[in-house]
Length: 147
Image 1 (spheres, rainbow, N blue to C red):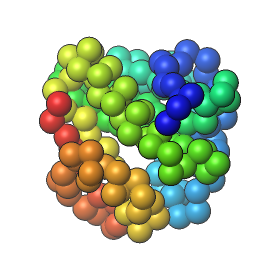
Image 2 (tube, rainbow, N blue to C red):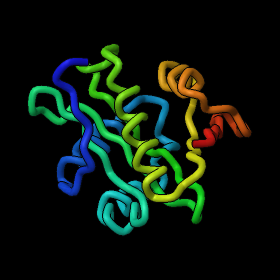
Image 3 (tube, rainbow, N blue to C red):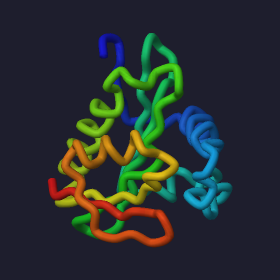
Image 4 (cartoon, rainbow, N blue to C red):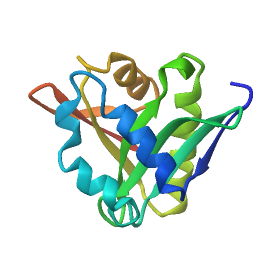
């Protein structure tokens, strides 16, 4: 995990590029409804939350977003690690950073949706990190963690 750092990111071009790479995952197409609108207005879409980029050796290697859902709840979105950087524990670092920011913003819980059949490693990460399932529809699992 040496040399990896996560920062809040205001450079929307970096985030757009990483989000677009993430959108190419086969089987995850339904996770990207209204995606062009989201990309075009990242600052307003994630207002009240935050955008994050993870860097390794100066290269943008990962991303995540925190979207305000309500006064006390935020949704984790777009957690993505480029394939060359997977398996190094970087997702855990991103989650810790996202949780710290969520607490700082006054959120008491973080929710997410994922597709275990398409992204089994992500699903396992969320379970290991303390998320619990709160529902499932057509292969999409909703999860929540209390901070």
